[in-house]
Length: 557
Ligand code: GLN
Image (cartoon, rainbow, N blue to C red; front, top):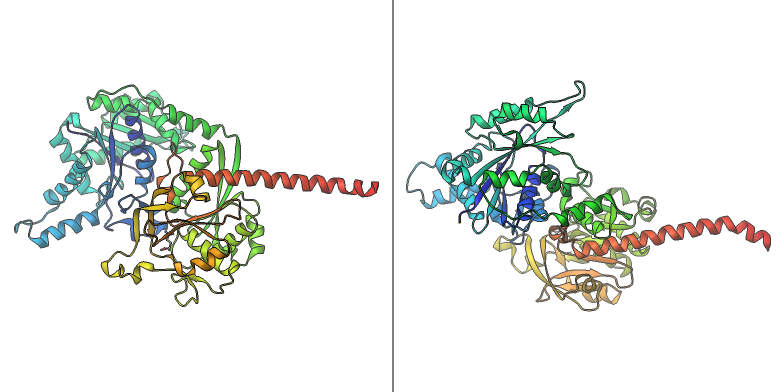
């Protein structure tokens, strides 16, 4: 049986949540027992987002096979069971790189190499590859209709309709229906224009997902249907929601899945979204609150840590808690422990996330010292584990000037260094350790209690690693290495047993956390933070009561 294709395009403006829409349709189809795969084409010329600024592009999402991909792939994994790899994210740059390599090899037998058919053929081949062994392949086209860069992709999906037929292809267009306050009216014109643009390149959308802040009335839907040449039932209200995990439920209320199945002439079992309903119920009915500080740089731009934020949400939902997340600019903590006490005292947990470059490092070290000395739950991820080791080396072991050679190449104590460079990996062109690697967990450690397993697999994205020459000094002083690569080369996890919750990992567990399967490291961290917060508040209360009673007591004396 050949797979059906759903193409998701966007119009009017960017950031309408095409990725979430594609992921949510995938989720709905899975809830009806179908097997899906999802991919994204990014029309920009970069080969991958690996070298792009997180300010510009947001998080680089890493797959098991070590591909550095667009953050929408994170949504795909969180909402579906699709197994994503480098096949699931293509940029124009990567496509052209492949085409030019073929041309140089003479694969085109002297023909003129052109956008149509050579580029479009490559695009179609990439789509067909992810459609093997699934019922439905969802294909998201990045950018907005009308962009010059996205034209070859639009042309490719137009050809797919011709080639695969009406019953095997579906065009979903995500558009905007803004409410104009001055007129007190929802406006359909931007959607009309966007669909016209699509029509001009030969694509008639089948379903319109209209992003809006209020429900579209029957009249509005009717108007859009008439002008855009789609069925009224195919004009969907994609209303803003408080939690992204509500989107599949909103789509279900609008019967998007039924519509998709009908258009693609598919049979499927009834939908079961009970687990997602439970998640959304938790979102709206928390039993308590937890406040976490993420200390890093890029903090003003949330998208640079998309998966991290979601993983903390998952960890909180697992305990039925509402998460308050604050991004604390590391540079602001450089002044020392006093600055930390002022800025971090109200947090239940402190997290230092992954990152690159020197800026803010000294502030992160201060935050870690504060967490370690004051017994505040700490979770360090990648850079957050490396800085935890540096802090321990400096402040506990007295190794003055200890650092990572990334931040201070002349440091007297390279606690973190490029191990692989010394092993000649650099010459082979592999500068980053990427993707899933096995880690052995030591028994009787916090890591072991958290995972409940002795062997795990997590995703990596780093260049530097822990220097085992310092293992003896650091462990003698109370640091515990609780996870290592199976051959012992890489230190993967560290912890401080003499602390309620102090753990660091060289990998990025946030990439594997899902709302329905919260990652144990996040679940435990949030749990510890909540317990600490409760205790902190009780202690504060009893101090207050004590202070209140003291004069009386003194008077009695
Ligand atoms: N900059 C550090 C390294 O390259 C940490 C990387 C990260 O946190 N992702 O090893």
